[in-house]
Length: 254
Image 1 (cartoon, rainbow, N blue to C red):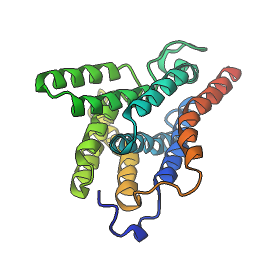
Image 2 (cartoon, helix red, strand yellow):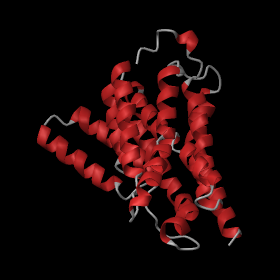
Image 3 (cartoon, rainbow, N blue to C red):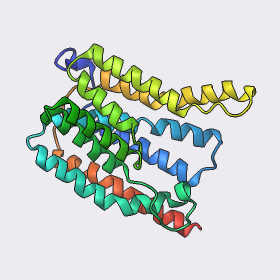
């Protein structure tokens, strides 16, 4: 994306957009854990929360190309994926497995981002096309056991492909929107369920559409001028800390 053009019209920097993504993620998790499914509030917060995943995949793809050390970047993801696993399972065990307290319920989102990072490494450094494809497929398969598996790796590859090209970026978000509708569409068992299921799937794509609009038309390609170290570690720490707090509240409320 050419962020050098019309920067004055693009008012949000990377850290501000990430902060929005943290807020929408929190709303999504609160809805999943504490609000009755099927209610308008639950549906609205869940759909708004889908803003987070494409935003994080976008900045992962962008950060991969600009980081000074891919080794340190990958290591940070691995460390915080490990730190986040118990809080993730504490928060979502009952939702995913029915276990009231804690059980393994899949790998967390930072682990998924680590797999996405590994896919980008494979794309850059594995020159044998057969081996490269085999490794990418293997990483996709592993992602099926993690939060936003398949979808997050696919979006990361799309965003890596579309980097620095506005038209390709629009196409990437359109494909992501279509994929979201497809994966969230549950037609039910009767003809009368088809249209409500389709409408619900379209609403679930709202977060991806919003992410695309923000990245394309509001992102100025900059970082925050102040507090860069704070923001860097805040975004890594927010994920496990908020899950730990929500998980503890969930158990207290049992």
